[in-house]
Image 1 (tube, rainbow, N blue to C red):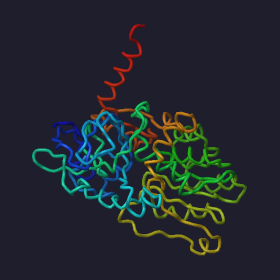
Image 2 (spheres, helix red, strand yellow; image 1 turned 90 degrees about the vertical axis):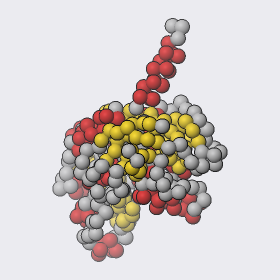
Image 3 (cartoon, rainbow, N blue to C red; image 1 turned 60 degrees about the vertical axis):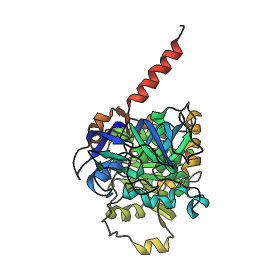
Image 4 (tube, helix red, strand yellow; image 1 turned 45 degrees about the vertical axis):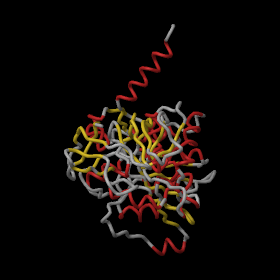
Length: 387
């Protein structure tokens, strides 16, 4: 079949909207009609080369849609099911999955090839050339074929243009607070960066019972959004932050410090660690350039105050359990997915969305596709029938 997709042909260039050829799913694969995709900063890392997926590449890894066709060996999904893609696939059988760490599934090692997990070949093509997929997903498209390990089934009443956020950003940030940092009631938390990940980290810290939540971000707009989500203090810069954190924590420092900036910088690790309390935990969630190798920290401070520096992938979460859980929390009013979405764009507006992200205008932009609009019109017609 033919469909449309946003393709990156070279580094530091714009996404190009192309008509591509899409093969039918093989035995362990699923054809999905996408309704929406989050515009995560990680796809910007593909553009800059910080995450070196091979090119040409279809972007997007934070998607949700409706199953249209399943491969012969897929028994638990059927056409019509609603799914969210997990950007880290989970097999359920490897040591990490079986120990409750789906975010570290062994299949994750295969996504950088850009090919299908099943046989390391491509299903997406243009003019006879194979296209790579971001994280094995490629959600900047109206349709895609993915491995069943990348699919999480959800109840059909959840709006897909909100559920898509759980494919990466929201769970990554929320889990960074709830799981990796293990925020406890009464603790003091700092979140550096209020994009999609940082805003979700604020919500996770609030739900966990943090006493104070300080955010570091230069954007007044994002500071206001963070305050509406549960932040208690704001700092507009790393230079201003130490005094704000000292005041918020009665000079104890942050029990948990979460780095959620768009791009990590090694030089900031020392500053973050200096604001971390005795026995405090510094969580590094944001992506650093792959070639960055140097970080300077005060190791005496690390040892004598028993501080910790830990990494967090996908918020140390288990997406098969956590995606349905967070959707239920949203339905109950415990988390706010609506506030995460600043603007929606059509597929053709993908470059506009990333311009807005770079300008600091968006907490999270999403791409919304024709299938979502058609469903919305059908739902409205059904709801108003006979009125």
